[in-house]
Amino acid sequence: MPASHAARDGYAMSLRLGCIADDTTGATDIASSLVGAGLRVQLVHGLTPGPDPDTADAIVVALKSRTAPVMQAVEESLAAARWLRARGARQLVFKICSTFDSTPHGNIGPVADALRELTGASRVVVAPALPVNGRTVYQGHLFVGTDLLSDSPMRLHPLTPMTDANLVRLLQAQVGPDLAVGRLPRAVTHGGPDAVHGHLDAQAAGYVIADAIDDFDLAALARAVHGAPLLVASSGLPAYLPQAWGWTARPDAAVLPRAGGRAAIVAGSCSAATQAQLAHFLQAGGAGLAIDPLRIGSVAQTVADVIAWFNAQPVERAALVYATASSEAVQRVQQALGVERAGLVVEDTMSSIARGLVAGGVRRLVVAGGETSGAVLRALGVASLRIGGPIDPGVPWCHGVAEGCGGVGVHLALKSGNFGGTDFFDRAFACLDRDCA
Ligand code: ADP
Image (tube, rainbow, N blue to C red; front, side):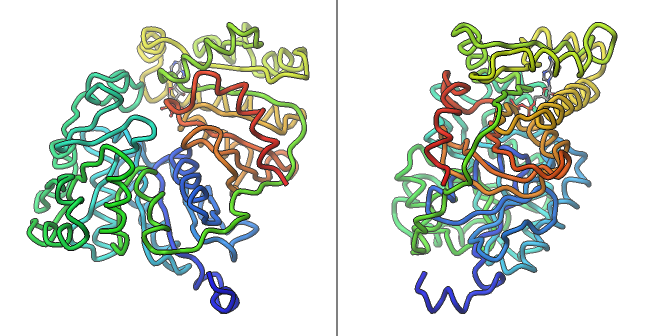
């Protein structure tokens, strides 16, 4: 940005993108993409201005709307959208999961409908593709690696099992009856912005599912749609928006304060990648303690026991506390407690443990699981995060102040369950020094 422009820019003038993410790790994922593209990004958890709002090029609001009741998800998303627009956001991105995590009724469709009405957008491009993590869209169908979504491990997700890969059908069932869901084929995108605009103009009002199988597709798509008032996307497409707009990258976009203190990992995800990371960590001699959702809180296992166990581990290496379990074990817990209550019990437990760990001196914390991460941020009282460089695609280190633990600064890596390489847990801590000033 030219200096004169920077001087003229107040908060409202400088804010370029407003993003509404339907879960916490989705928020860190898109924030990481935008930081990678050279934007200074602030993540807010709840609608409170953070300590450093004037300099943000993009603000990402992290909601917990993916699995919330539909009306609540719509209201919270609208509140976030109005909040961002009041701060000058010129463009809104509704950040969804690249595996289109939703139930048969929402919440992607109802939230998109509400944002569409708010922004006055007629045809909204929906782009879940994230090729760097193997999520591609072709002929309107979502693939995870070589599998259709419906054949991928996502079919077994505890909260949003995905059993259909046809995104047109999935979204059509979630949106208003008067809205159409069409497709934007790759060939059209590669025809350039005019071809895309012509194609969109020929569609009925509603949504178009954009095919994209690699980053060239996403870059071409961004060049065509970067001016849209509303986009529905994973973190894939937004990474190309700054370039499409021609915004200059900031060299200090990813710098975080220096890190220190004890290191811990809290895993509440049962996704395939987290299972593999956990197995790798334990096989390599890492210390880990399993939480049993049916015993926690009883005499047999209390949060205080868990903290005492952690304190007895060697300080040089991160120790791991996990609820991660096989889908059979999760089903047993869900049968005993009910699906919703099972999720809440585990999230409450893991977030109480995280709070106990930070209160006891942990300052570097990896959290695995989207819902789990949201619960941890709430328990720590972290309202705002600065975003650093990536550990793996979509998972950056972040820094925030834990108001719920005496206002201490803490470095957090909030990992969507299925993100990250097998050696993620140990490598995350090795990466941290790289990004800290
Ligand atoms: P992901 O990012 O993999 O989707 P989340 O944290 O978003 O992970 O979701 C996992 C859900 O499964 C959470 O609600 C968590 O509380 C729940 N969960 C984790 N472990 C268990 C378990 N052992 N039994 C039942 N539910 C569990």
